[in-house]
Image (tube, helix red, strand yellow):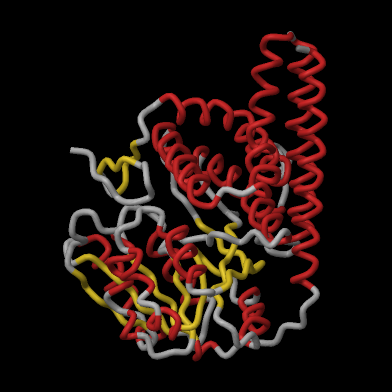
Length: 398
């Protein structure tokens, strides 16, 4: 048992180092490309809007403030009075209203993906060369968007996907979710991209030529799928559209008010990961994503059996991984934190230390979330409806 523990520990360390190296190498490759300022008038941002997040108006305004000439199409349910009031408040500002088109849509029929249902109805309304699909709780950095100038030169068919990087988050459980995102997303997507294993996109933020959406009726083809990001990527790959993993980050400011909401959100993401494995599993995914995730969990439960000395070893593994990945991530995204996020109070931890503590807690909780997800029915709560996750499509629970 002890020999097996050390073998698994060694494999874990090797795989984590490889993952770190591949991620940094991919970032370095993209970072050295020469970038020029994009013409914002060539882009339209499409945002399906749903009330429920207290920062909705703030996030929508942030993207307007971050751009000058970019057009926006907002898609709102006719029955969503809170969202309608939020949109109408923003439209009162003459600095923004001339760049916004709003479409008020009927409620989504049963068995259809609400986000894709909305997007499918306005594809023909897009007049610009490029389309940006952006969730209503995601905020993009205008300076990073100039990376698109690199991809504009590529005349083949492509879809570029962004990367979530959360900062300036408030609330304990919101910070815990952000810690999970920040400590995993960059290293998962960048490492797979380095290995040319791009098989999905980040659904909260992606960019492609508008004619690709129209040519392949992309949203119509995936409107029955729950995991719309994986469904869109799989469908476009079948049409020989390549996936580009950009280093353009967006701040997805999830508001998670309670422990229950934290557990439900983590379970949803882990179930979606299971759908990905069923549809796009590969040897590279096994060694770069799956094993580095599962092996620390196995080691943790081994240590409970072997004793305190082995538990200390596993905890040191967690601490070392989080510290090393955090330092690398700061280097990758240097300057992207808000300036005041680095101010240190005399009586509190520095923001960097606080982030590491949240990431360490998130890392320690992940094994228990994996067990919880495995032992409970594969049902999630989405838009106040229970949905069974099994084949990637939407199946409402009665």
